[in-house]
Image 1 (cartoon, rainbow, N blue to C red):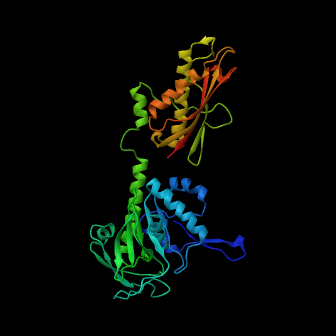
Image 2 (cartoon, one colour):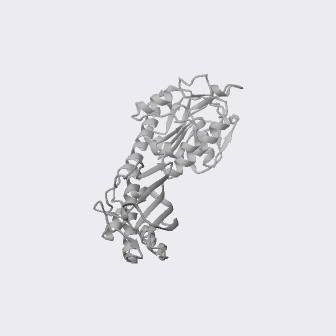
Image 3 (cartoon, rainbow, N blue to C red):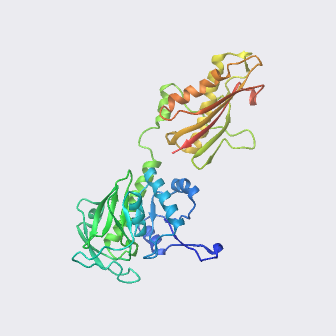
Length: 378
């Protein structure tokens, strides 16, 4: 969940993140684990790997979110929607998500249209303030078990217009009180403050959000079907070898954000180098290509160890092939094709990659080929 930021004028060292404890308490009461997310745009992808859902909280009533906050939260919403993560916006959070989905952020409440509604009756929204009408068939109607409710209120700004969302609740003066986003994952915007948990509806909103987040996590973490990459390997009579421990002071693979770099792998089969020697002297072209394929399989084993599941691989950056060869050998690219062609066969939707094929005098363990790989995770 996102905090607000307090930024004392002229004292940059004293900037403070702040969020009311009742947001965290409401998440915890519903069975979730609340985590407060600082405004670090470069860390959004990593944060979303950790988090199962995203809550955009409110701001000081009547105050627009700081530019730093709005900029970060808009990026966070974009990443969360693209990743299919459940998204809940409260007050400012609802307005910001709605704005990202195409709605309009209005800085003043609408004029009277026959019925006066108190949207900011007191400084603290610790009592019910007005009624809302809920759309039948909506998430809120399901939680409420009806189509009319009473809610608290504390806001001067509103969401207006239309966008990629369905309005599911309004106050009697027409103000949008809730919407459901037309997004791949669960997306709910609430204008009032359910974190005060004054009603069963308020508690039901957080329970539903936490449940949807848990369902999303289970869907991502517990595959219901066999890994398609492994299935394609099996169809070719292949299986991944065990990821071997590196024989030196380095790791087999390392992740930075969504990028995984796999250290150079030699062709191990049953923990033994498949062949030793040089292309052009003792190792035929086809034997070299077979070694490239096995080195690539060992690289995939290291990649799977980091990714958890090869179906999470969404693309490749580079494949580097090193070929131990005699000085007169010139078909290094044909040898490394053994790895590149296998990559294309088992990752048909995301196989394109940059490549280098280099001839060298010798390789570790006397292997004729070594393969290095850089991949992107979704």
